[in-house]
Length: 221
Ligand SMILES: Nc1ncnc2c1ncn2[C@@H]1O[C@H](COP(=O)(O)OP(=O)(O)OP(=O)(O)O)[C@@H](O)[C@H]1O
Image (tube, protein in one colour):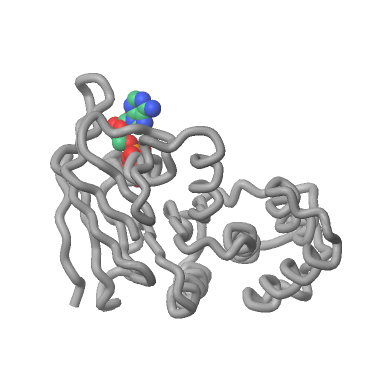
């Protein structure tokens, strides 16, 4: 589903990732760990096609991302749901409108279909009672659930999470992590960048670790 072959990415002479090989199968859950500045967001941007490698290939669903242009790139970005640490929601809009906006942007116009999808995803994420609440009134954990709902609304085969628990306390982090595990159990591939060792250790989930420009792979016990 996600494959990096011998990828090199540098920014001038101050940062280089080299010889990056990643292989994440369809429906698999993998962590992406590493210290601040190690290149986690760079790897995510390569998957999204927001950055291009200097060398090597980045395949998602067998498509070489750096080759995608125009409609193909737009389609690729719809196929990869993204969740960020800082939620990136529109605070003055309510939960329903934040999630529905993602469907409007993709050309959905039928009100009944939009209602059906938004209600289903809110039900799955325990957001039904907040559906008409402005996002600014929600806690960090609730906002992150809205951001996950927005990322899931198109049923993307892949979800990328960039430090999704970075602003949350331990209890909320564990809740959010469990939601991602549930999403994976439903068949979605999940790549989860985190600094939270308490989520990684003992989880038994494979980990890609970036450090000093290199990547290694292991399975935490
Ligand atoms: N567009 C860019 N131009 C130049 N340098 C960049 C660019 N994007 C990132 N960098 C540099 O690349 C390095 C890796 O950054 P990146 O954001 O990928 O790290 P990270 O592991 O996600 O860090 P954090 O955990 O702090 O978010 C950093 O030294 C950063 O300053």
